[in-house]
Image 1 (cartoon, rainbow, N blue to C red):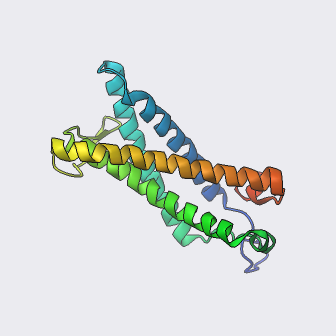
Image 2 (cartoon, rainbow, N blue to C red):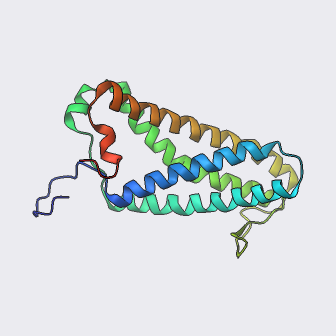
Length: 189
């Protein structure tokens, strides 16, 4: 927002929105990398440590996602510049909106499904080894077997959408050269 009292919409994301965006990006990439790495490890103290870290980071992702959604609902993001919106084919504009909505849904779905899997498998989550979280579902090995692939599938879907999001941002930056990416980069005007 302009400090001159104007009611014009912001042209850039706020510093907090930028911080939440980049922090969530790092957490999601780290969670995905550790999740893929640890999935096939043999039972060992290292695997147990990684699973605990993964669960702690997943709960943190969930908390950050709540904060980000609350911020987004109470602070309108900058609209696409009209020149960019008019230059985009309608399918790109629809993909832009759909990708954002789906990513927000998966910010919640992936950790909640993981929490449900951990609970159903009989492994409680103790956030950072200090705060015992309630079971999301009752322990049930058959249910755990059904939930486990959903967690992986939703995580891969989130990474696929994130990859599409990055590719679109880089296309706008390097091919279209329209400055769209600068709205989410700190220190860029």
